[in-house]
Length: 364
Image (cartoon, rainbow, N blue to C red; front, top):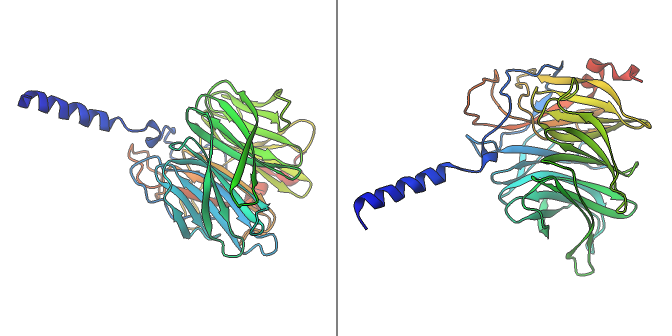
């Protein structure tokens, strides 16, 4: 083999290596600040370790129902694995499990060794839903296994509970959706049973389940938000919001639900304009209540290019009425619009500030 051919092969290999996972490069609009009603940041997590890449993606939160000062915030580094933080944002655990994308959880999961918190994460490399068990006593999380799926690339994921059944809903980049029932067998191993499959139409990611109403909200990134039933026999759907519209700008990313007394609020992550649209969804039809953006405050920078979002109502650590947690595309003061986005993390927002900004107390 001549030196010229060797050189050419080396150049080809370098070029090929340079064409890395497209998800390693943020496609956000790189705004300096969001265009929604301003709400101050109240806290933040430590940044994920992966740098110079689109890494932090999706959060989830569990709080001890007996002691709201005890809890865990989970956050994915979609290039490296799963982080666990305490309620102040300090890293308490890291599980290096590769390209994990979206995370969700449900507590009270029965196992032969007692009740645990079931944590599920979409796993793009191992082609399934990665399952973990959080021990409520120690607040430590352990891998449990991979519920395999026939999706080309598992991408978005959320969990739900229907009666005594624990459900994991995973969607792919092509918009295909799989709904699985997860249980623990007598030997402690997981049992995964597919009970529903359908197609949304195009790339999906963020989704969230309202256990009480038995419905799934799912974001079709370029087209809007849909509502589906959890009933395995029902694939009918209702459009909650179109995108692009005055409410939401593609990409539609994360979705979250927050229950505040008798009211239930759906919160979306609108990446194209760095806003968080909010709807009241406990009635027959959704009612749009406005949108907010997270601004720098208390030494914490604002949120732009947002991806995943989660929320929890009631007392949560330092937040007496609830908290909203979202991914921030740039963890730097000033939110520069440079093309190199070296640090990403998750920001915490006091639900009282959102309610005040959007006047939700008086919303219909």
